[in-house]
Structure formats: structure tokens, C-alpha cells
Image (cartoon, rainbow, N blue to C red; front, top):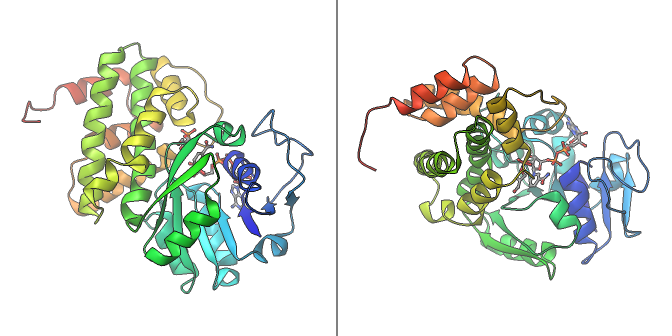
Length: 312
Ligand SMILES: NC(=O)C1=CN([C@@H]2O[C@H](COP(=O)(O)OP(=O)(O)OC[C@H]3O[C@@H](n4cnc5c(N)ncnc54)[C@H](O)[C@@H]3O)[C@@H](O)[C@H]2O)C=CC1
Ligand SMILES: O=C(CO)COP(=O)(O)O
């Protein structure tokens, strides 16, 4: 039995997809819908998914996916960490925790020290997965044998998991691409054009790679599904909330603050990490300020365009 914690768009989509393998228990803290989750409209829940507010039911499963937003994971683990002992725990969160300045895997490892900790990440919109469209993701786990077991358990004919032991690289790719997607959206929303977006994606990828290597990631992980793959998807599709948030900033449009936008808090976390480690992360710094309305789009672009010319 597979347990999924977090009945948002992604948890629900994975629940639908993974019934191809086993029955799934999907836990949400507030289930106030029936049949169709409003966060994932148009998707009917298969009979093999048990949707519940009973956390015990989900925690009875041996494999548990944590499909909570990155900034909610820490407080959830503070409360429930001891109950996760001995489980295989797979996080789908794409962000860096603002309080601890770490990715989800370190938070989980600290809260449940004897659990197997893995990360599921890569280019995949919840709506695509739920509709059964072909998707390729990265399953990262430091324990190679456990990675193989989880890869088999969580792959389906249309949801193909590639595995790696580089957890740091995989989770950083997923977290950092959200920040660059906000920048790319801002460029498009401000009407600066596709050429400028290509520039921001490429320089953003260089910034992602620099930071990830500094934090111990393998460079090839960044060029894989979890890095370049997800960056490409998120910076080029209006299906991305981070990209759309950027578009709203760029065009000065209103934004619904209830929508999960992982890149905003992660940009703030990156600004703190840059200050701590003496790193130069100009795009992340600018996204942090844009997301908080501390700089205008014009000033942000002027600042980025007036940086010294240098070698690529
Ligand atoms: N939606 C997508 O296409 C994808 C999302 N992800 C990642 O998965 C994570 C979750 O995203 P979504 O499901 O899309 O977000 P969502 O906004 O649709 O759902 C988040 C869910 O978490 C619940 N939640 C929030 N705080 C909680 C807490 N403290 N305790 C228990 N439940 C809590 C909310 O009630 C909501 O049901 C994010 O890190 C996101 O980046 C990854 C791949 C694709
Ligand atoms: O991570 C995602 C696609 O891989 C989803 O992106 P958004 O959170 O920007 O919607």
C-alpha cells in the first residue's frame, strides 16, 4: 500500500497514477470535496484511492510520499516526525526551507533519522500525470539499493522514473528552477520578449549549477530531468504557477496569494544562503526582491543589464 500525505494537486495526481501499481491512501488535513479535488479539476478519483483525513491510515503504509509544499514540510515533520520512523519517505517538495536553509531531504532525515529518505522530482505537471500522459521523473535516494526498490514501486508504464543517488543535485534542481521560472515569467509579463527569456533561462541555469555544485551536487544531475528538464518545462509553460506568478509581476496584474508558488520563498532562502556563503546569485536576489515588491520590474532589469560584461 502506498500512502500520500498532502491532497493538493500533486498528491492527488500521483494517487491517481500510482493505482496502476497498488492501492493508495491519500491523506489531506482538510478533505472538503468529494469525487473531484478542486485543486485538480476534471480528474475523477479511482476506487483504488482511499481519500482520508485519518493520518493513521496513511501512516500504516510502508512507502509514504510527502506531497506537501516545502515551507509546510518543517512544521508537519516537527509534529509527526517520530511516527515516520522506519518508513520509506519520498518527498515531492520543490523548495528550500526558509528557516533551516535546507532542502526537504535534510528536514526529513533530521525528523525521522532511521527512515529511508528519497526525493521524486522532475518535469511533470500534476494535470499531465493525472491524465496519464507520458512523464519522466527522477527518483533520488542516497542508498542505491533502496533507490532501485522505489524506482520499481513508483514507476508505471507512463510514469517513468530514472534513479540517481545524488539527492542534493536532484532536489536543488527542482527548487532552483522555480526561482528562474519566476524571472522568466517576469520577462514575458513585462513584454521583454522570447530572446530575453532565453537569456534569463541560460544565465539562470548557470546560477543554479554554480550553487548546486557549491552545495555538493554532481554537475550531470543539473543537466538531467530534475534540473534542465524541469527548468525547460517551468520557464516555457503557462501551466506553471511560478511562471504565471512571474508574468503577474511583470505585467502588474493581481495574483491569488492562496496559490502555491514555491519559488518566492526559495528565492528569499537563496538570498540568505548567498549572504551566508558569500555567493553571487544575482537572478535569485532580484526574484526575492520582485516577489516582495521591494523593487520595480524596470529597476530589476536595469540592475541585471548593467552588471559588468564578462566571459560566459
Ligand atoms: N502541482 C504540480 O504540478 C507539481 C507540484 N510539485 C511540488 O509538490 C509540492 C506540493 O505542490 P501541490 O500539490 O501542487 O500544491 P497545492 O497547493 O495544490 O497543495 C498543497 C497541499 O498541501 C496542504 N498543506 C499545506 N500545508 C500543510 C500542512 N502544514 N499540513 C498538511 N497539509 C498541508 C494543502 O492543504 C494542500 O492540500 C510543491 O512543493 C510543488 O512544487 C512537484 C511537481 C509538480
Ligand atoms: O514543478 C512543476 C513542474 O515540474 C510545477 O511547477 P509549478 O509549481 O510552477 O506549477
